[in-house]
Image (cartoon, rainbow, N blue to C red):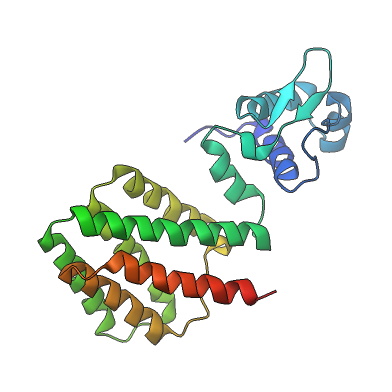
Length: 226
């Protein structure tokens, strides 16, 4: 793990302010002197934090001039995604885009597994779901089941990027549970959904199409909510 430095807190506070729109794109960060007074740290610490922001493409440092905030959506460093999840805060807009990303990633994982996984791997996924569904579980245990389901399916599909991203994502959820999507669907319906996905995967009955139909209907319901 990276050692904790005095600039870490300053970096987090400035990055969070950028993500939350307190420093809009094109605006200038306060001067080093102003930030030193506001945050109670040395100018060297401020410079270290701003250097890291610039390294990620969140600000542009002009020698002898103001430090200008850049458009977050133009950042090309993948680390910005993790910072956005961690520092922006679980507001409605972030939760919406997180939910969309996760639902559509699920579609891709299912589609890849349906095309590439060996039959015995898909049968193992079905057995995993059936084992869980055959016993009474508290809803709190559903998160662990869901993680094991998606991990098994991504592994069966053989796409290492999705395997690694799922490992990163579930660790992030453990550290920041407010990002977790809490469905209003009753547990029996959730279980039935996963059983049907697993069955269609094992039997080769268009699982990706079924999944897409379900999430399309879910998106339509969510769009109706304020």
